[in-house]
Length: 198
Image 1 (cartoon, rainbow, N blue to C red):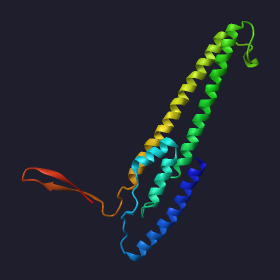
Image 2: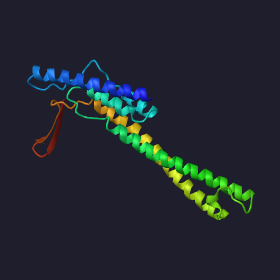
Image 3: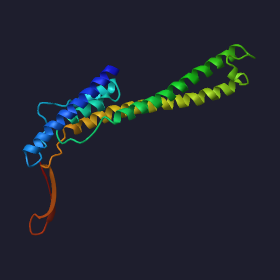
Image 4: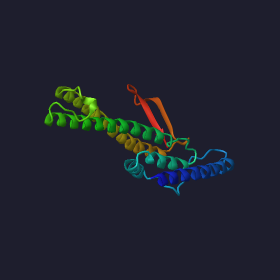
């Protein structure tokens, strides 16, 4: 996994310097900036989602690689990867913590149920069965919450990679324009004209 991420980052750095060189040559050779994408590269949208599904954050790195292959694309996607890893790390940590707590309380409950008057862990020596049930329910609720939060972060990571992959090849050149103006259809009716130019 580490080798995979390092390879992606090294390709990212190389393609960024290569792109800057190509774009600089294009800028010096033309008076008007050309926003034509690199036709030798095809960014695969579904592949970004697949990368993020298999290893969260790698789809964003793949999108960064795609941005670097297109001139005049100033968007950045790599900075989302540490945020995703951090969010999954935090939710995963608390999920594991509450999962362990539910196991311990359940084991203590079963011990006290089968061995009245004794305890399995000194931490629960003054607890009654009703107290253990209360603690178990509290930990179980928090465990379930962090299961949902972890799945939510994972799902958002995949969706974000998929949506951002669409913007990698989205045309943001000066050729795009949006105009609206009033028009007169006949003597008695007026309207609004909307035109998109590509």
